[in-house]
Length: 243
Image (cartoon, rainbow, N blue to C red; front, side, top):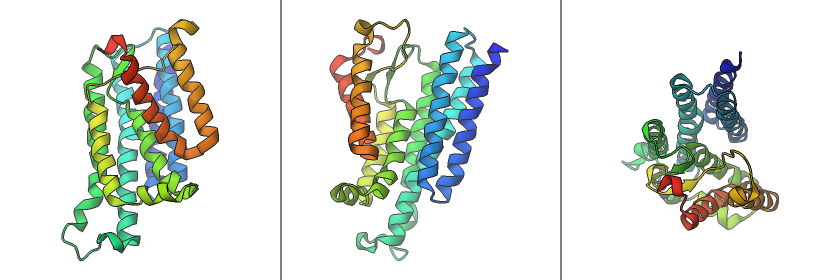
């Protein structure tokens, strides 16, 4: 029975991703965001129980990547596509209208995120360096970054931030950088905890505390800042396992 628990959680992750796709397609970004968060929650625990019960295997690894591809790869690509499409429909000031010859291709730039996610997940499965830390931004973190953008717009707490996010050129840059950072040779520390001691995991603990404070203070705006903080701290400490 124990060996089936991780795969069951993986299927819950995939199910959450499929539901998130439906909501993202219909422009229900809040529901899509919540379901992706739920999928990432299941993704964390499937790996935890696989290690706890010592039932890790090739089948579980492949299932996990397929589920992540949907929840943390296809969904953020679709959300970015929809954000471009919303701008096309509502903001003619950027000349993104049906009369411009390049208009039809612009929203599809968002799927660079999906392509980058697919390459990262495939590379992760054969990269023996990423057992205790990561090289390149993990797809769940990237998905949270992307899905937080429409939530920041709805939150409308800082108008100047909303103006930046509503700029299609900014979204193009984010899409390209997202595909790059997923696969960049940048060592990033892992939040997976084994045999906890404060001395060993003080970086992770400090990061989590700072993340909670930012979330309470800035709500959705905190999410991209937390991801940027994660990358910055990793560049400072350079996790040994990933060098």
